[in-house]
Length: 99
Image 1 (cartoon, rainbow, N blue to C red):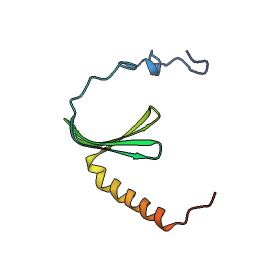
Image 2: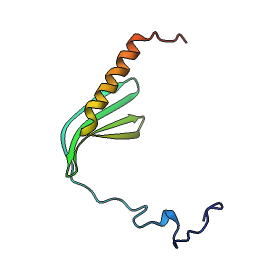
Image 3: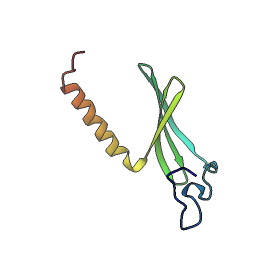
Image 4: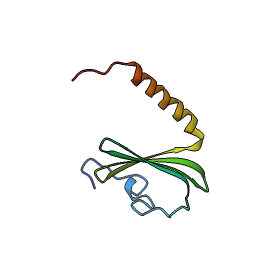
């Protein structure tokens, strides 16, 4: 037990919940489209996938073997695109700070 952790009145510690630490069962995912882009030292892989719960975009960033991933449900892709468009526009309009 962690020194500042108190016993639960419900009889188990929060991290002993059923299934904690066990891998989730694999869900069948179909790849609909995949593209890779290299920007400086980073590689981004954008993959449009579909599973029984619906379609989603998985964006994976690989930097020197370390990977981070975000998943955007297809219902949010249009809003995500609009936001990225706004960020590109703002970046182009603002002068860069000199180092």
